[in-house]
Image (cartoon, rainbow over all chains, first blue to last red; front, side):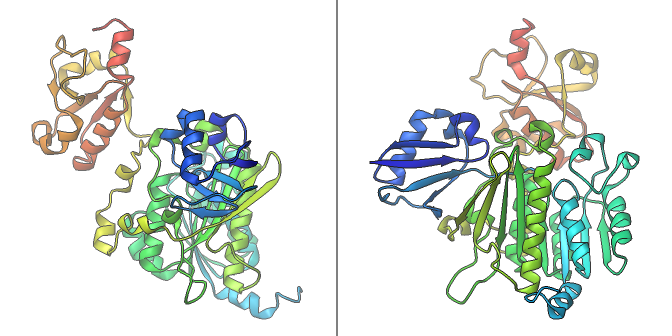
Length: 77
Length: 357
């Protein structure tokens, strides 16, 4: 069972790709842990998380076949 | 004439008052399309003059405009497009006082700025004064557009920028357009999307991006829109009163390093050292110490309470890598705006590299 993780903006400079397909993870907190282990440089950056295009602030459980987005702030103009 | 968009909609546009903060990459297309659409009153604020590097994307300006104030040229060009529009301009960086004085004269605020300090300031002001905010921002090949602070109905709370990003990133986390570079067409795209949202909010057509944030990727032409929810953390961060708002230091909040913080090399400091005081803002345990050079040791955390020792002197701040000394300069200048202060570029690390200590 897989889930899709999407990265936007300058996060892709660190992850190397805007999309990652990984083995199912049950909660957003656990997903964050795994992603930060994989890409430690992300830990110093700010980003919001959305599960299936809905922003989440607390730890929630992830349904199978979900798509989780890591969205950083942009400031250019 | 479009069926959905008749005389009534056009009248709403001509009665509308929109403030566009920023006349750069985003501001130019926004202003062009709002004027073309017939928005009756437009305010434009920008403290910058045109430079050559702007010309790839700031399409209100041309080669002959380099060196002139952006708001002046913008007003000239926009009035040539449509002289029925009332245009007010401000040659400044919108501050808390400007929000307090001018937000009440506008229906919609558009964030077309290029830095986090301004973005958080504008957002907080929109929340405080109850103004809808059309947000836009770019980063390399991607852009974001959102509509904040608009009540949808009785039940749904409005969302603002802080619900998404409660706290700004550190200064060195994010590069601006001049540092990272930007595809000229990108702010054009995002600016037009912002203008579209302004028109929708004014006329009531379509579904504005209220409580949503759209991300556009120019490289693959993909759009990604996510739904936002109010974030309980947010109430801690937004100033709850006009007084608290005025007292918030947004530059400081964003560890902002404005271009007028002067960084100097060690060799430059040697030339001016007779007239300056060297201040080491590192913790006392950090090594190597600067004992070879006469200096004061004031850890950054204690700097604010020890400023009396430095009053009115020309200061060179130094730290380990040159980042904390930038903050020290900002802090010093925020208390002594007319003083001269510099940051030693690269800090003690540079000195060690060059075998100067």
